[in-house]
Image 1: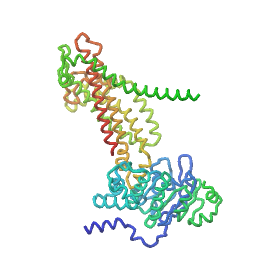
Image 2 (image 1 turned 135 degrees about the vertical axis):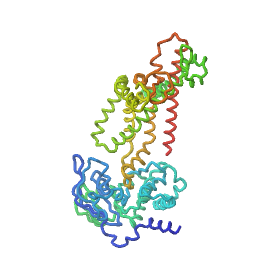
Image 3 (image 1 turned 90 degrees about the horizontal axis):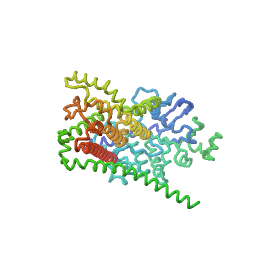
Image 4 (image 1 turned 120 degrees about the vertical axis):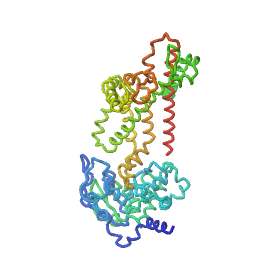
Length: 272
Length: 294
């Protein structure tokens, strides 16, 4: 019994051994270019993402924010007509040119999409899916993880009596929180969020935003958004993109109060 | 103007209900018609006798449909067992792994396969499948002429594949790519994603595609008739000849009308076929209903 608790603690608090060097970059993109069949989607991207901060990718739609986000855990593999060159270092490992198994690297990152896409299984099954892939079979551990991560996203009290029901029976806002929880369950270091509140009602959006602020103590968050006010509420670090290029980046205060380029000034004033 | 628009609105919805009712009533009308036509036979023989007796001798007024029922089910089930895995694997490959041009190339090929008249499949069966089964039987030490359940099942499988494959491709196309992204980002491999997410999400669609393929295969007449052997017997194994219900009707309707009750017996055969297809449709509906609850 004691041993189980110890293992549990080990799993639940994976970041205790960090502590120092919190501001070192966790993601470094160097000279990234992405080409589709007949266009260049990202042009020479250089980017450092600070650890345990919320980094916001800002810019009008179609400027390559989502593509950049998907490059970070190589979901671009799914699209055979995309071609990538350059380097993306995550924990000092170039994930675009690594012989290592990509599935392990992907588990370092939790993904939250524009709309919730619950896996076709039960509520609890959504949480345990990634854990089972990791080889965790112990029922007690799985149950404890389900509860912990559902509590993390403030969903536990709403669903604790129907964990075995289909995840599709939840409301959209609940589904999105479930998607966040299942991403956290595999203990990522980074959360990739692609306009995670764009399909949600104001209250669910607020819950997600509050979660993010809490989560940045333990995780590094990269958030794509085109909602300027959301960016202002959440961002520690801002990357402003326009037509596949990074136009300006810096600390949130600096970017919002003191924009240097005309493009960013225009964007901040008009919102597009 | 206002009145005209309202009238058009009323009329159009009335017309829709009429067409819908027509399609709802059609199977009912067919069923009732078949029952009325085969009523004569049911007066003379008990239903159990008709269904489960193997004694088929129209000239002696003996009508046992059991060999036909068993042959039909053998051929159809074997055909689906052969076709379903092939369809599933190719649909997964085409929708998940194949480059886009391969899918573009395959679409017309599938359509052409689906459009080939069944009599041509029958000829192909006689020329290719029957000798193949015959030599396979020689290797396996089974007595066979080649005109057999297996030959019919193979021909049927090839005929069913384009239909089922087309439906499966549509099923997989409708599964959002974001679900795959979610699964991959949780650390799954491509194959784990296919196994746990895509097949599960598409389960009810897969079952209904196979169910429709089953109904089509069960009713297929001419190609089966040409290769199945048309011998009234209980098939011992897949190399035996058989005689399916559709072949029975197609071979004999309009002939030998001098034998009393023969006409009614063939109608009863049609009714049986109708009932079997209906029963399997309900079965598949039930499985789909169960799988959707997941």
